[in-house]
Length: 230
Ligand code: MG
Ligand code: ZN
Image 1 (cartoon, rainbow, N blue to C red):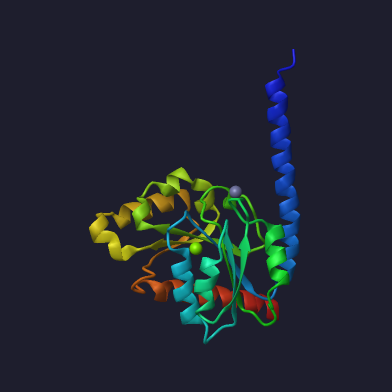
Image 2: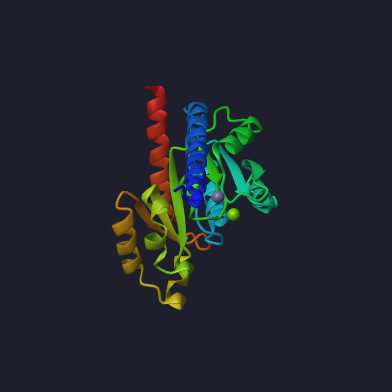
C-alpha cells in the first residue's frame, strides 16, 4: 500500500534537488562574469561581526585594489550604509524573508554594480550557518566568520559550512580573557571538521590578526590575476 507521507517527502526532496541544480547552473554563469576578479562569499551566524570585518578589510585594501561589495540581508540596508562610508561601491540585496542569498539574486546585484576593473568583490551573505552552505553564488570560495562569543561547538554542529570554507576568521579575540575561551581547543575543533581551512584569529575592533588575514587575501587576489593574465 502507498504511504502518502513517503510520496510527499519524495516530492519535497525532488523539488529541493531541482532548486539546487537550477542555482548551480546560474552560479556557473556568475563565475564566468567573475573571471577577472576574486569573489569571496562571507558567511556566519548573525552577530559574528561580518560587516565589521568587511569595514576594516576594505579600509586596509582600498588604496591597493579596486573593491566592490554586495550586501545581503533579509531586511534593511543598514549594512550597506556602513560599507558606503568606506568609499567602496556597494549594493544591498534584500531577500525579503529568505534566509540565504542565491545565484539569481547575485546576478541581479551584479547588473547594478560597475565591476569593470574590480580586483576583489566581497559578498556578505545573510547571517545563517545552514543553507548558505548549499547555495553556490559563483564565488571563488567561502570564508566563514566565527565569533569567540559563539563558543567552540559551532564547527561540529554546522559542519557543512566549515567543510566548504577556504578560511575561517575567529573574530572578537579581544574578548578571549573575559569569555575564558580556549582558542587552542577551538582550533582543534576546526581542524577536525575543516582541515582545508586556513584559520585566522582576529579582532575587527582592535585590528589584531588582520595582517595575516589580509596577506592571505592579497595572495589569493594575485593568484586569480595570474590566471587571468595566463
Ligand atoms: Mg552584517
Ligand atoms: Zn536559507
